[in-house]
Length: 224
View (tube, rainbow, N blue to C red):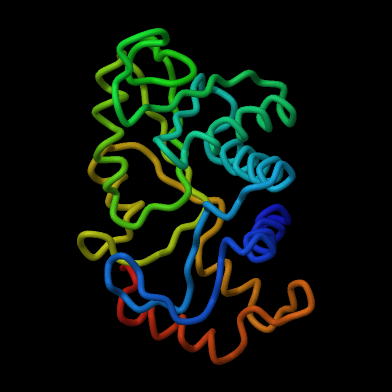
């Protein structure tokens, strides 16, 4: 596993973004882990987060794209932090673009924030995590309605590796439905591998009991 992925896993724990215990998800599933990207709130956290995303996007998609699209609302700071990091790390100016929830009819009008989309733009979408694909279902037609662009793919921070609408994980379902690549900075398998019986900030994050609970969760809800 690349060193930046190991650092990112520990970073999620240190920032209280990734927690382990007993959680009830929006879907009603009982999960031994929970992720809340809204816990990234400080300047240093957002700077590091943008750099991890930039490295993962560079690994997956290279530098040959024009726009990073972050769906409202959480995708807005993600896209901004990541294009800053991309410029710093790779010297490539990527434009950021996000959507508004409501169309603005005065001043900076329209449904988009940041850069406008132009015919021929190559676009990468950035999100925190996806479990159902609902946000892409809303985002895809918005992007398509703005210009004749090529969507290269989607990058999220964590692949939960659990079933979405069917038997595959949400990222694979999105790939099948929309025809573009999907990827994550890390997967839950990598998280479990790296954190089991490892101390982060003086405590073991995934002990044998939690590791067994994660295995049981994936036996019931894991994607095929």
